Image (cartoon, rainbow over all chains, first blue to last red; front, side):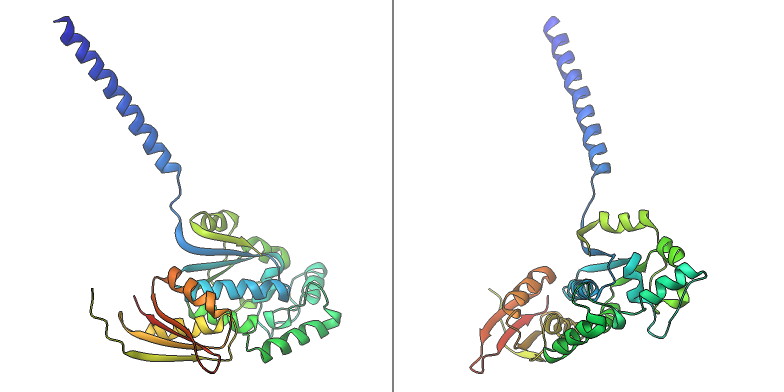
Length: 192
Length: 81
């Protein structure tokens, strides 16, 4: 009889232990993130030598069957301003900012060796000779291949950029939390 | 082993194009192809030697052949997954 009781105790102990382990596993699973075959780029830089690799990588990921999204913030936003949009903003500070950062990837400057636009011209000449697509062309290719281009709402407000200033076919502007959510489940995320 | 019919149904000529041109051209052609179709890619970009196998492993399509042609170009045969 005593032996049986001991056995029951032992069983109930291991049962409670098992329950505890299941609970621990379940909470661990809730906290873990399942990564998708996805690339997310935070396009912070609007310089030609940043927006170019950004658009090359996003396009290549989509061409490889990966899900891809690009979150445009700060100077990166000017790369997705429509080429015919000139001065934007509601006050002198925003207007000055837009004058210093002419919109569209076509007018992006080089972060070094810009030489008042001579650098980018040389770069584009080299790219043409080597049949490398320009960033503005890559942006359309990216859109065609299903890359989601997402503007940052906060920077748009800060810089005085409105949705009508930006390229057509973009996603709804989002905030930092949604950007984190985009990166959270992406197998690859980059800040360029 | 499956019977493989070695018939290339599409040819993608990306000669002269640089990264990521050949892969974008390939992805475009692949959209119109059916599973099992074989596509031939012609390229001159030396980067394609490593890029096409990488692309195949990411995208899950099968790289059947990779060779350098007599003219110094590269030829790849891909089977759509």
